[in-house]
Amino acid sequence: MHLTVIPLTELLMALDLHESKALTRALRLGAAVTCLRQHRPDGPRYVLQGRVGIAMVTTGEHRALGSALLGDLAARLEPHLHRRAAERGRAAV
Image (cartoon, rainbow, N blue to C red; front, side, top):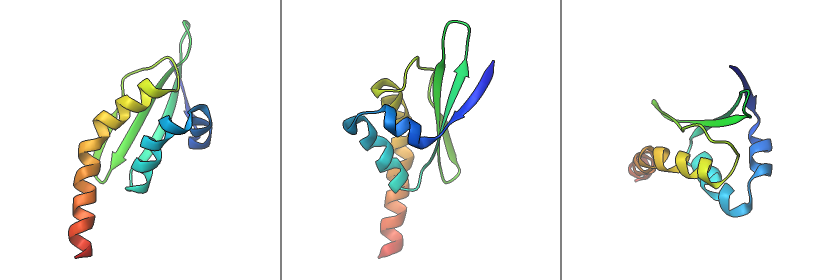
């Protein structure tokens, strides 16, 4: 299995505006996101990895760059983003 890192600019260009909002929100809150393409005989699969502080999440494999992939990332990353936002809020006070 061959993996290729997809630049975030390519990922953002493949998404419509609504789909990219979850990704840009995560990036604004300090998440690091990596998009990987797995080359398979039956076609490519995409996986997103997100990191917030020491927490790291990985999505399942998806056949396309789109709302299902971003929804998967958002569901896994959101609890960590809430903690990060709360920590930033306490630090600002």
